Image (cartoon, rainbow, N blue to C red; front, side, top):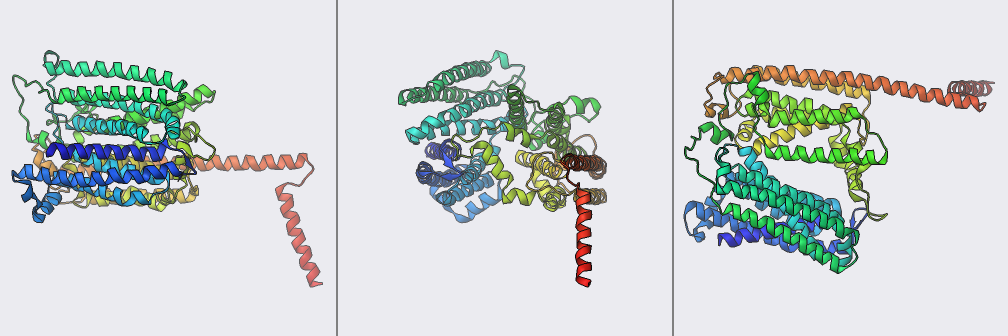
Length: 612
């Protein structure tokens, strides 16, 4: 029963992802509106959406029966189910999964644009990934690496397998034009599947004994086999797409894709059915590792903070992905003969390095054990790295390099980005007042409520906070000092007022934090039983002082940058007026001032005529 419900849930969710992917990116559209084939696929997608919801509910009851060691018929007790869904982490993940499936099933018949399918694709991934955070972590003591690699693995295989299913289900004419896009997606998905699978398997090993174990040899075999299969698949796609003409070539391509996919899944199953080697002297797993996800670190000093590295695979995967996209964009411009300012690339590299240091580096590692280091990490993610991302102009680079539509009426990926930038949603969040509320208001919502303690208890909470700090800071500094296009440019005087307001609010928050007499973490740091910096309240107040000091400096830098941009724009406007006057003089016309004086003289003459 367990195997049947799990398989049905995975297959239906993967099929749904593929069909939503097809509606969003594979099938042709007309100014984002669905054409008949997309409508047919949308109606077809209702079936896997319904199966996903039903099978997810079935998995819930089967899992509950297993946990309580009771017959499945007794697991239908509503009181027990409600307690499980609301009071346990595993139950909450099932609740998110079921809620996502229900939302998709309700909304999918109502969508008629590609933006709707993209939105539902995101909801589907939230539902699919929620239970992953409750999976068992590695035995090597790095939960962030184990869970993060598993997240990437699930995303990659869902896109890859779902894309193949979608190609099979869409009609022939759409299939031919969809294959180039699927080919690019399949290549990167395959790389993600093999690399994340190998990393996840490797986290189960004791590194000193890895090379001498059968399990370690299987991991090495999987890496080598994966590299070979990816190389063969890439060469085959490149050769076949050039001569893609009919059903024979399409069938050949799909056969190779399925073969590579089956090989990947088979090797993964082989590994999952093999027991990792048991070390001769197993290490003790302390309470800190159970709660924080990694062993207790030694007392922090400059050397430890600089050289400690506890990788968070989810953040690392995201950073690698956006770095690859940025480099690809710069390379495309270089091939065209266009230059991309080196300063923007340096700003991007700085932002990536700062983000990695604040999440996986020594700073991110100690942030799990100390509030003051958590606050330093927060400041880098929320105020330092975002300035680098904003000054790297990623939106401008994307608009210059993303592919356009395949037909004159199709928006393409570039058009989707333009639509997002001009959407009401982006106009609302890019309003300076809203951006300020998200940027500074979330400080009080997070730290002055029990939410902070709840989020610190799980890897999902750490991931959520890191992404929120980064995105909120990027949005705020995009509004203030951004060089990328925006729906509405904010006047410089308003930007300066917003910066002073942000500085004041941040200072007030930091003083409030320094004045606290109770701990805000809900007992999280006390439960770690760390041997250093044992005065938790003093550490919390130190975090407030750090937040005040580190928070004011980036805002002051942004204030200086705003003044510089204002001065430059004034100079540009002055030069524009001067050029206009020079052109008017060369053509024997009056300049703007002379025209204005003539206008005033004409008004005076009319007034004198009326009086007489």
